[in-house]
Length: 173
Image (cartoon, helix red, strand yellow):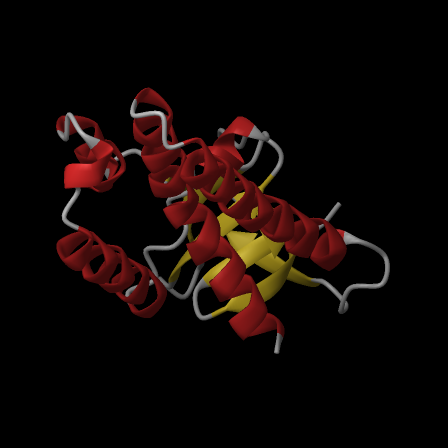
């Protein structure tokens, strides 16, 4: 269950910036009720994800395991193409002229690809809350994504963490 919940929460916050961008466009077009709903929905997605991560790291969470790490590198630096999805609504001058028949499936496809391709670790909003994402390698040459609150600058260490899903580890406190 945690695997599905964590994956859903991480994907939701990866998509939340699209909602914030649409809210920005809606505000400039005096679509105030749409703006409020988009802001509330996007903020709810972020809060739920932060709650899932905090609860998972708490004392009530499943037992953490030790993970030997040999190499570390930032995992969220090469996903700038995804930023285009966040910015595309800004290229529309009029909110009423947005092609929702195109946008809704585009966002749904992005969410599906993020969940199924392990790309949901790209979370600029979580980065704003102090979370860091690293690509870490094990002595068995398996690469995982490590989600942590601390900055990691060196490999060859042991990290206590909980596996959120395939190839995703959340460092515990």
